[in-house]
Image (cartoon, rainbow, N blue to C red; front, side, top):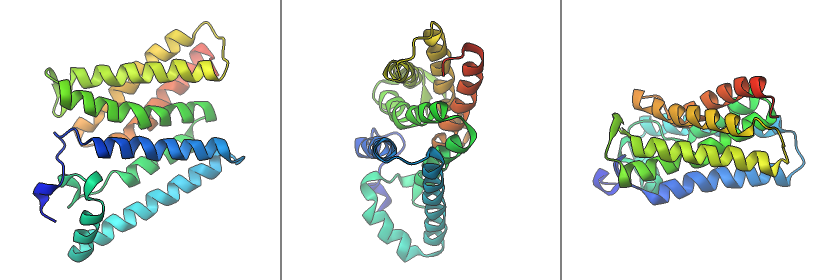
Length: 213
């Protein structure tokens, strides 16, 4: 496949954003649908991540396989991913690490940050970004990530029926660090990994201070 037919990081690439959200929503739906321990889903995510890495290494060594996969996954693939790792294994690994490292509510909340805040930051950053903060990162995209994380945190607490007076502060500070964790990809660290892991760590500390969950 001609690299010019693949989307660039500077493109809005809505199909990729929708795929990113859809994968997370389906996984979270299955988590709520089936009566299984959350650690079970952590092992599934870890297995998906390992398969993704094996597939990436295989296509690096096999140009024909790489071309075939580029055609098949073309609608959700970036030009930069044709000769480097795709986002899938990091996406699954980030979710798995959150599940293994943090308590259930914190893990789910950090994964929700990944599922929704990451694509929102990208879309708004590309479409409306004018003020550069870091390479490939804009103030507008970061604000979009912050608002998304804040709404998610508030909504999650509301759905869980939590009545703590500290919810607003917990959600605000959690959203600040959720948005900051998305900025870390400017330093060549995959945000599919940094968002859930860094957000989960900060949310754990905030939960210890504010005792929301």
